[in-house]
Length: 128
Image (cartoon, rainbow, N blue to C red):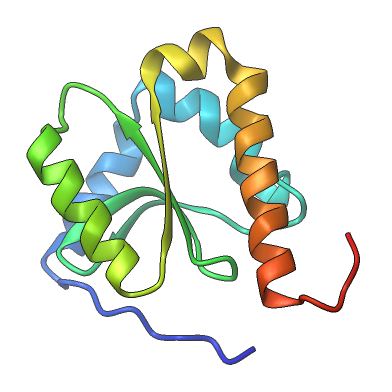
């Protein structure tokens, strides 16, 4: 599959770098399960500039964005961001802080099931 190039605002690169260095406890907890290809062998990035936004977590191979709801997010911005991401073919998962801490296994199961759905969509002949 040809790797698509997703445009981004270069002004967000430094902001994303600073955010990676000041991660919330929620981001740190989920990152533990996503880093180092721990999630089904896929590489995820933290605080990734995409379009005019910074995604909390992103896997280019799956075109999967994972967003965490928190104090820095605004509901109307989240809806607009999600639509913009979906319009360029990205899948977006959104989780609350509470879910990350109180329902971690359920969150990980949702992420794994979404990955399986994407894999099956990308390789319909391949059995999982």
